[in-house]
Amino acid sequence: MLDPKAIRSQFPLLLREISGEPIVYLDSAATSQKPDAVLEAMMNVYRTSNANAHRGMHPLAEEATQQYEKARATVQKFLNAKYAEEIVFTKSCTEAINLVAHTVSQQDHIVLSLLEHHSNIIPWMQRDAHIHWTNLSDLEEILRTHTISLVAITGQSNVLGIRPPIEEIIQLSHAAGAKVLVDAAQLVAHHPIHVQKLDCDFLTFSSHKLYGPTGIGVLYAKRECLEEMSPMLGGGGMVYSIAEQSFTPLGIPEKFEAGTPPVADAIGLATAIDWLAHYDWKDIEEYEQHLLRHAEEVLTTIPGLTILNLQPHSAKAPRGDLQPQSGCISFTLAAVHPHDLTEILGRQGICLRAGHHCAQPIHKHLGIAASTRLSVGIYNTIEEINLLPSAIEHAQHVLATT
Image (cartoon, rainbow, N blue to C red):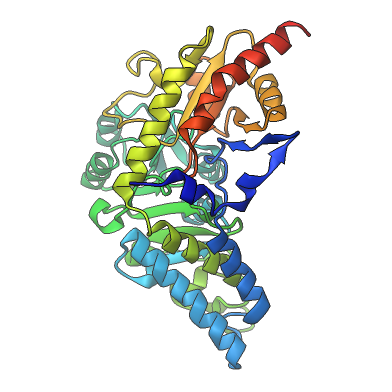
């Protein structure tokens, strides 16, 4: 059983006020807040052991290397990967997807769903790949009638909060000879991941949505996939030898990690994973589901408010065996633009996201340009959710009289 009060006490930013009002942070799908443990671990790096990893033989450099590789092993264990070298540190989930896209050619056919974030759309477009859009119910037909190289699918929608049936998608794709990339940016803080059981070929996520720091992401890839891939970035730390007109890269994962390694960020990510391990995944999922169910109940009492997650999936949302909502709720409010609504809520200390959330395809499919998104983390409370109806009604009143 989670203790929200004890958890909140570990997040110093949540003690802040905005315009005299306590912060109600309901924007964790954009980025999570960071616990003291993460902040202290990163500060300790700079205070006591700052050095460049894989760059020296002196004690500080060796410490940095050991801590950096220990962080990689922590991520390996977190994802249940078979080998530590299957974990590549990147600067973000976006860069991790781009690293995979770098291997795609114009001849390749890629399948994307309407649920995807722009980070899992634009990299494939930049490679001029042939893109096939699926509503999930037609995926088997697409795989049967086209030679698909890769299916790139979100683990959890950052707009609707629904989870595609990843296991089934992977099985169907592999049966058709296609590899699968799972964008787990939204999934990673809400549900345990076991890449060996999933049998996905690639999986990506960002630290900052897992209570860790910004500036570091992760690409998991099966060892044989990484060995076949060429590096996207060149520079120090990724090369074995250089001749006048050519070079030989190091092995995996080093050949994908050009430049100075983000040692403090990697340690911050590993610390966030260790911190989260103090809590049971079942308790986390049940608690966050409880928050979202309650949010649905209170929001549906507001006249003119429509929760996108509650629209019949058979009518306008991607079809298929979609799993229960998790992480976020998105909604529209009649005659009120999401930007105006969230600006007024922000004056009351309530932080929500407004816009298309870097997911224009699903918004267009739903027939809207933008929405307001409420997203939860392990630190949110029922009391925060209960503030929403009066705050939104106040915003409606302000906008109606201006």
